[in-house]
Image (cartoon, rainbow, N blue to C red):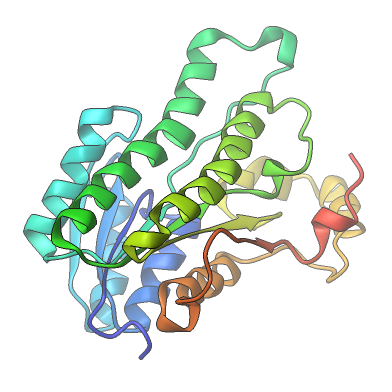
Length: 254
């Protein structure tokens, strides 16, 4: 098991891609901090599946749009599980709106969760590593829309574009501390966040025509790449973004 003895914090791991990453990491031998806005709901299912692999799971509620809660999440993770080796910044939201109609409160919410939350969660994690002179790994779960336009989702694109450059910048700054920083950019993944798309079969058919591999992705596809980056197999990889999209990014037409 290539993550044996490791401990990981995975934000937004109550369901979807975050849950798949938590389960994959546990299957590979890691103990997991499961974070979500509500840890008494779907997060309990993630915990059960982590424990089914014989690993320890810890539930920590935190609203990552609030900077003080990002710090509390990391402090509690270290206190409850011990020194953390891997942080996966997965929590994210999107708000659909024509650009001309975007409300300031929606802009603030999307950017606060997707970018500011990931920024300050990472800062709290990195401070712990540097103080203890320990190496570590940071993984940002971004989106193909850090690169591709997504009309109607300007706030989401802005947050993921910021995450792309943050990944590269931190890789350079934190490399001397033995901390790697990488991104995973999913394409069309069959999760609840895409429920409206999944229920619209004509749209699904048009989308599949643009995916060279001919299918939508599964959360497990994303989790597999995250597990590679979290493991010793990814020790010499930093500042990279891996597109998990079946080839969509290079064949995309809006």
